[in-house]
Image 1 (cartoon, rainbow, N blue to C red):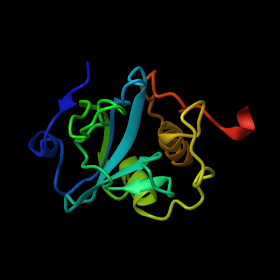
Image 2: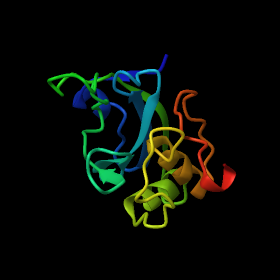
Image 3: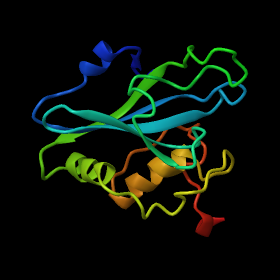
Image 4: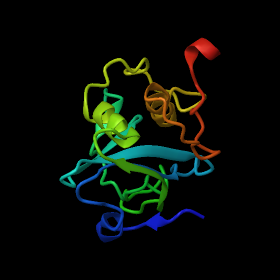
Length: 163
């Protein structure tokens, strides 16, 4: 089982000053889709400034989101809940870190830059995709970084040209 992150203090234990870091986190999707996972990136520069980058439909017209939730906040527990305060646990999946010659920096630079060439920038579909996991998978492919996403990160293999 992967490490559960429940607070800013727990998240900060992962951070290292002087390194570029890219974290991959995931949480369950809201009920009734809780069999699936939502995956996102958190990037941190050498000064330890971090930001979260998600793909997905968060009720806005844009597809890629920066800091829409805190890095350690999971998805809401249920789409039927009257309160949106209860959240699913966040699980740590992978971390890359390094200096300016590293894979972590290459991924950091792309995520911190302009991602306008993402082919599904204005398109979202829960199943079969494109969705948040399609975005994470596309970023990893674009940077030629091999990270296997959770088995239930549905949409990670979606590509229109592969359908």
